[in-house]
Length: 361
Image 1 (cartoon, rainbow, N blue to C red):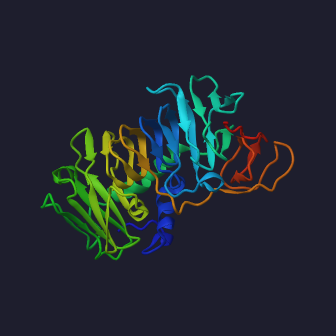
Image 2: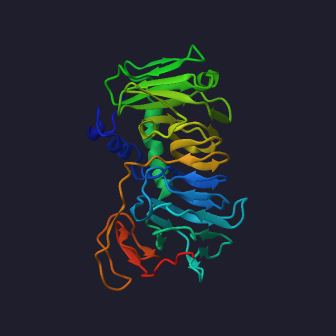
Image 3: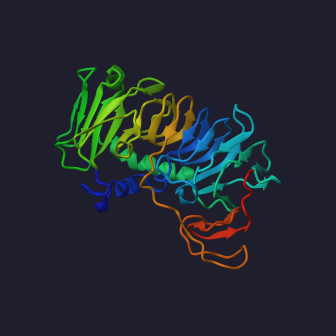
C-alpha cells in the first residue's frame, strides 16, 4: 500500500487523510475546469468556467445555515449555457462566494451583472453571504490543484497490485465483493476492470471495510469512450450496512473511484464517494453524493450532494479597522475585493468594500 506521508498512516483522522489526498480541493463537492448544470445541486464548488442554469444552487448537506454557513464557492468565469442568462444562488448557499470576473451590482442589489458577459448572478434569495472579487486571480488555481490530485492518485492507479490481504471477487454479478477488512493499511487500493464493473447487477457490489478505512478502486482496462457507474452498491462500514444511494458522510469520504488518465465520459448515479477523473467529463444521471474532481462536470439529471458536516469553517471575526485597502491577517483569500460587509471575513489578505447587502422584500 502506498502511504501518503507519515501523517496519513493507519487509522488517522479521516479528514486529515482527505486533506493529504486532495489538498485545496478538499472543501468542495465539485472541483472541475468546467461546471454545467441542468438540475438542482447542494454543493460547494470551484471551477474555472460556470455555465448558467435555471435551477438553484443551494447549501451543502450539514454545512450550516445563514451566518453559520461554512464553506466557499469559487468560479473564475461565467458563461451562457442552454438555460438563459442567470446563475441562481439560493438562500444559504455558502459563507463566501469568490468570483474571478468583475461585475456591476444592480440598483436593487438582487443581481451581479458580469462585465463583458451576458451572464448575471442572482443573489436575490441569499442570506448573509459575502461576495468577493478576486482582483489579481490569486485566490485559487483550479487547474494546478486538479493536476496535483491527478499526480497523487496516479501513483495509486499505477501500483498494479491490490493492497496485501485485499479480496476482490466479481464472479457473481449479484454479489461482487471488495473486502479490505483483513488489510492492516488505512488506505487500501484494489483494481477492477471495466468489464467486471459492467457485469454487475444493480446492488451487486458489496464493499467491506473498517471504520475510517479508505478504499481506492482503480477502474482499469477501459475499452470504450464511457464508463457507467450508475448502479447502487452497498458498503459494510465497520459492521454498518450503508447504501450508496443515501447521504452518509463516512461512505462519501472514504470510497474513491479512480479513473487515472481516462479522458472519456464517466456516468454516475446513486453513487457515493470521491470520483477522481481529472481528464474526463463526469456526467450525473441520478442523485449522488461525495466529491468529483474532473475536467468537466455536467449535471444531466438528479442532484449532487456534498456531505459537509465536518468541513472546516473558513472565516473568522473581522477585527480590522480603516480604509478599504486595509490588509488583514487571515489565511485563504488573497487580493480580493469584498462586496458585502458582515461580521465574518475569509482568511488571508483582502481589500474590502464596506457595502451592505440589499435584501429582497
